[in-house]
Image (cartoon, rainbow, N blue to C red; front, side, top):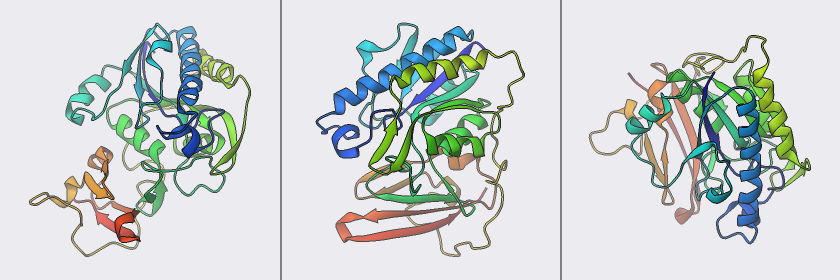
Length: 290
C-alpha cells in the first residue's frame, strides 16, 4: 500500500471535549483545539510513512476547518475549503488512493457516552437510520469510499467511535485517544498523538490485513426494515426522483448525503432533525429506488 486518503474531524481529538468552547469556530479555545487535532494527524502521518506509505492526502473534514495548515506534516497535501466541489469531481481525486483512514472521529448521534457525538450537524440532527439501523459519519465514509474501492483501514478518536468502526469494518485498526463519559466530558490520554503514531505503524505488520472495501449490502446495512413510508419522499427539488435524494434543508443547514447513491434498491433512509424556526422536530422516512 503506497497511497492513503485521510479524512479528519475535530470532535474525536484528545483534549477536545466541548462543542461551545472548542469545536465551534466562535469557541474561545477553537484555535488550541485545531492545534491538538493537527498534532494527531501529523503523528498518524508519521506512522503511515513508517509503514511504507508514500502519498498521503489529508481532507480537513471539520465544517469550519479543524487543522492548522502551517503546522501540517511536510509530507502531506491538504484538501480543504468550503463549499466542496461536485462529488463527481472529488471521486476522481479519491480514486487515486488505495485506502482511507479517519483521524479525530466522534461517535454517531445518540451514543450515550460518546463525547460530542453527532451525525453531520450537532445542533439539528437527531439520527440517521439505514434500513432501521442507526448510522453515523463512519458508516457513510466506509460505504462511500468502499464503493470506490477504498477500504477503511484505520481510525482514531473517541472510544465509542472505535467500537462503532470495529463493528462495521472487520479488520480495521483503531486507537482510542479518549473515553467519553458524556456528550460534554471525556477522559483524554496525554500525548495522545503518540498513540496514533504507534497504531498507524501497525499497518506495516506483514500479516494479511483483513480490512477491505465495504460494499452496499454488507454487514447489517443490507437487512430491510419492516416499516416503509408509502408517502412520496419529502424535501426533493422539483422534478427530482426519489432515488436521487441528496439534499435536505433544516434550519438553513444543508446536508449532501452522496452515499445513498450506492445503497441497494429498496433501502430505507430515515432521519430526525430539528426545525428550530418552528420549535419542533421533523422526522422523515425515504425509500430509495433504483
